[in-house]
Length: 341
Image (tube, rainbow, N blue to C red; front, side, top):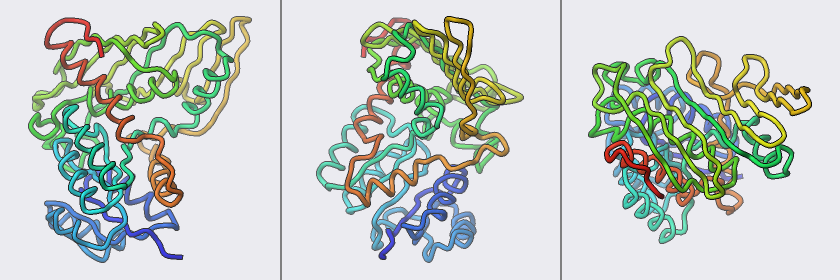
């Protein structure tokens, strides 16, 4: 059977620890080419993952006979590279946040439509087993009416993860566009939209840079969100949760309280109104902590989407809706107003 030929653009940490590792595990694909402006790094990564060709200019990589590419670059390059790849006839898996504006997101979606190729955004929270179960329970009515939620994603910061450490592009506004709110918060806007099955229609935000002296982007953000049916909740994103990650979500509903990834042992804890509880261990969530680098499910889903011809779970349109919440939060913080989406 002919394998899909894959190229990876950007060979920093997200490529090395997620995309390349997971492509290498997938029997349906072959890693053919990798690209990075850092020549020494791209050659090392290429050798480690058996890529036949290495490039320092993504335009050269896109001339190759490839079926699909992963875009794992700084945020400001997501849209231009994805659009160029789609125009070159490649399927695209783009890291989040998908773009730095609605205009860019629309251009990516349009490029995908015109090319007839798949555009998927790498929101891995949808593939976490506890989150999938929560969506099933909410959809089935097991929890009853959902009243409120809180969700958080925080860790000590990109310097513990990024290939460049404290000099990472994550801290530079011209390359990152946005800090913790875009890096981590957009994961949770996507998750909340997905598991509740509703769009977010209003957002209020407070955003600060308090812990990273070398950053000109936010490192702490707290959002208040309201869905179309009136569910209200909070979202916190931070690069200053020292000691351990917080990647938890709590759903407050008519029949009890559902805690996801909020317990060291059980990934799902459901406290019912009758004072009993259900506890389930569905495996560890993907995280930046040591031992948390299990498969994300993103790459396998992307590959299956290409092979089956079915749209991926997180299309460009879905990625845009999650991005819009973050863009609204930026406006809210600047204007000190609640923003309607």
